[in-house]
Image (tube, rainbow, N blue to C red; front, side, top):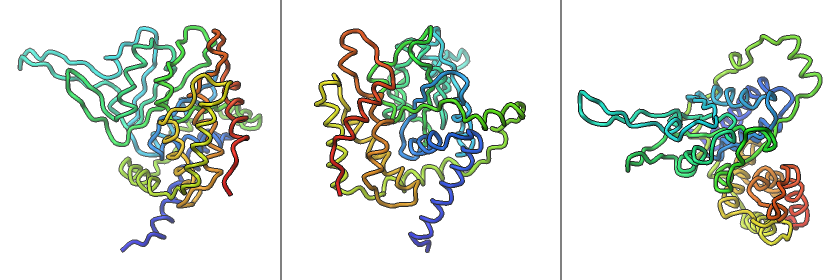
Length: 320
């Protein structure tokens, strides 16, 4: 019989292999790699907001290959329709019936590229899928593959031809992260070897069912009641702050606790500590809150929302 220690050791090895595989593709960005893995292991969905060309799509493709999942990519444009995402029923003349043709959403990893270039109607096609792992078509609910992970990229909202994601859509994303420009030495190496296909060199570390197994292990990570009190105090602070018009939702609280468990597991622990909650508060909450300034028509930057959350978290006492 396999002991608990052996299982834990195997999990740690797998996590390190995944981390190494992704960091080899996205050099110089260990923070973005770790956050994406945390989001994946916590059964969340990831929103990457940054300027074009910094590796958003590369990270998504590498992650899908590393976990052995089927990757489908949708380039979101202003004329994209919900049926282009979910699928469409086509009339079969031989059988005189309608046959459903699955859309690209039926995949293990869905890359929604430049999601904020599509209309709100098309963006909303992802809501049920991200929340419940299923889609509804012609009165029927169709399950999506397990695991199912959405990685959406978006350009900053001041770029031309973009539609801000509504609050209900943003709340479905467990995290919003930024990649940023690579370190100088990394960019110079890329210039010396511009034709190297880093995705092709990324190894497959596990199968999709192996990923599901790891996700279930994450769910068993211990979360002390004192941490639940601490986490709730942070979310409550976002609801009571005069700088924030709309604070974190109960979904935000649940997602933060799940992400904290994944971070603990990724770092070789079967229990959470306060740092797991503290360090994830910004990528988990900043995209979910609506600042008071927005009520006057002003659109705050992502940095302003993150700075507001950072100040609130700093004032919440950390449990000893």
